[in-house]
Length: 447
Image (cartoon, rainbow, N blue to C red; front, side):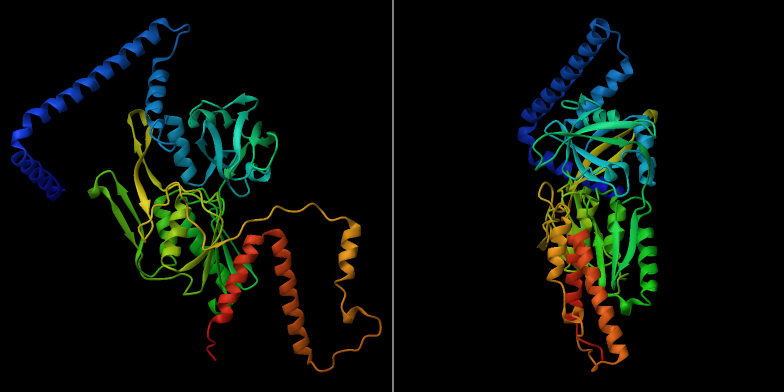
């Protein structure tokens, strides 16, 4: 710390020597700026007192001051805000992974509340809320013109109570209402499963549990596959993941990188920047990785996707991410409140900022909307063309294969049918698994 202070003092002294002839005008300009600030603060005090004395109804002075503070912060960008003592307590609970609410991450755009992403398994997700939806009304009351925190307050309520939100969605001609029952949101940060020979890591948020959940889940699935040699690759599913803690994004990225930069942050002053590097060790043991992203992948999700993409450690598949490339610092304030302030931008290892641009996938794959259910006649017509020689009465048996070979063929056919079913259920995930199969097929044999 002493070195930093000394360097700052030296720079100040050098500036005084080099600009002696301009001291008068510079001091005058600084004095004018200071006077202007004090005049504006006096104006604020005058308005505050007039509201307290002359507003049509009696107002709480504390509420007025909190509103003024929040207005000052929200005027900066959509992510800076004041957190009242209650809001600050709620935020601390959320980072631990359990809280009450609807289960959506939101931001503000053009005066309306925009859904960044619904969280898996929450009331909002089950009610069909989608990333990119705009919420225009809550229980019939418009949110236009409200601050984001005020709009969020309208959506809060007791667990088990009903809320009706009005949604505007691209592709829908008219706004529509969605009924949601508030519930306690218990976030499972990482869900893991085996899909054939592929380990699927579904990361829903970046909270205190994320890295430990991922490490444990991956180890369990490798064991279920009877060893890493039986794993073709890993799909890291970051779709509709709104982000969270920066340190967790760094740890998840580091889990699959042996070396190199993961992310850097740059603030207002160059000396405030930070750079985070990977440490040796790869939980995937070199197996190929596909990262899935979409428009609901934001913030910490984009850090992970950008780091693995820049290091060519993973192929990124899906659609362009949300584009939140800024870092917020939560600063405690007196009275148990807090201030969330944007203090830096973050950059991927190649030096690109994804602020407002997002991470572009290496392979663009949109998730098609599910078609309407086929009629019974259409299904019967389709089945006619799915019949084979083996379905014909009196067809000859194949006597050239052993029983083991027949069983292997049947097992391969079952895998193919499972893959086809997955395409109907989740086209993007099926596409990612197909990529991993192709990469595995191209790898040289160890025999």
